[in-house]
Length: 461
Ligand code: HAM
Image (cartoon, rainbow, N blue to C red; front, side, top):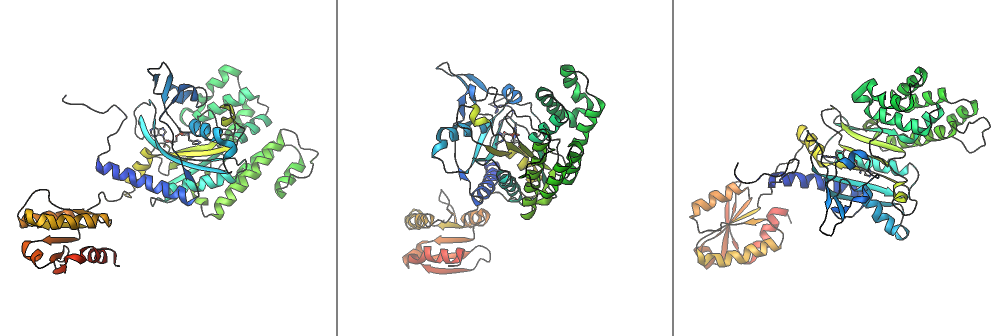
C-alpha cells in the first residue's frame, strides 16, 4: 500500500470533521461558561505513577506508557481527573471555593477498537472541588444535561442514570456484608447487566456462597427506579420506628434512640437523594434523570453519587460518566478536599448528533468575493480586500488573472453574498461595482465607502 495510514483508533480531522468538532467544543464551552466554570489546561504527558492504582485496573491496562530519554516512566494521559487533582492540590489554599473548573482536551487509551471507542478521543471535563454537599452534584448533572441539550438533543434522545456507591456500601453493610465482600458485590453489579448471574462468580470464589435472602435483597436494590422505591426498600431493611419517622419528616437533628449505627447513614443518604432529585425537578430537568442503581462505575476513585449519560435508544456506548471522588486529592498527597465531576466524550456525542440530524452545515463561505481586471486593478482591490478583512469580513478573490466570466462563476460558487468588481473604467471614475449575488442587481459605489456599505449590507448597520 502506498503512503502512510494513521494509527488504529487515531483520527485525521479534515476541515469538515474539524468544523463538526469545533461545533461540539463551542457548545460545551458555552454551557460551562454559563454555569460559571473556569477553563484550564494541562500536559498530555504525565508521570506514570499518577495513574497507577488511582485510575483503576481497567485504565491502567490501557495506558500508552513508555520510558522517556531521561529514563522516566511516563504515560500519555488517559483521563483528566488525577491531573486536575494535582493542580488543585498544589494550590488548594489559594483557590476560592467552591472551585468550578472545566477543560476540553485529548486523551489516549489503548482500547479494543469498537463503535464509539477510539484510542485518541476528546473529553469535556467539569469538576467542582471544596463542596461536600449534594449541591455540587446538582450543578454538575444540570451542566451535563445542558452540554447535550445545547445541540438540540432532548429528553427523548438521552438521559442520565443516577446511582450512589455510598448508598450501596451502607445498604450492603446493613445487610451484614463486610467491606471486602461489599467491594466484591459492586464488581459483580458492574458486570450484572452484561453477564447476568455469572457476574457473581468472582464473589463466590472469594467469599463462598451468598445466602438466597441476601442475593434477593441485592437484586431488589438493582430494580429500584425511583426515590419512592428507594425509600420503600430502605425502610424495609432498616429496623426501628424512629428512623422511619425521621425519614418522613426529613429531620435527623434529634437524637434518635433506636437508630442502629448501620441504618443511620443509609437514611441520611436518602435525604441527599431527595434533595438532588427535587432540585433537578425545580430546574425542569426531571425527565432527563433516571434513578438506576445498576450504575456503579469501573474507575477506582469514586465514593458517593455516580452517574452516566446514555442515548435513549441504547445504540451507543456511554456519552458521559462521572461522580464524587472525595479521597483522591488526599491520596495524591494533598489536602483533604471533596470533589465531584464528570467527562463527556466527543466520539459518542458526535455519533448521536449525527443520528438525530443535528450536525450543522459545514463551511464558512466568504461573504464578499472580489472580482478584478488585470494587474493594474489588483493594487486598488488589494487595499480594499485588506481593509474589509481587518474589519472582520470574510473575503476571497482569485489568485490568478482570470476572464471576468470565470471570476463571476467562482463568485457565485463560493457562496458569497456580494461581489465587488474592480474594473479599469470604474476605478478611473473612483467607484467599484457592487453586485448582489442573489438577485444579480448591480450598482456603483464610491471606493472610499466600500467598507461602510458592505457593513451596512451584511450586518444591517
Ligand atoms: P470515563 O467514564 O472513563 O470517565 O469516560 C468518560 C467519557 O469519555 C465516556 O463516557 C466516553 O464518552 C468517553 N470515553 C472514554 N473512553 C473513550 C474511548 N476510548 N473512546 C472514546 N470515548 C471515550 C472518566 O474519564 C472520568 N475521569 C470522568 C470524571 C471527571 N470523573 C470525575 N471527573
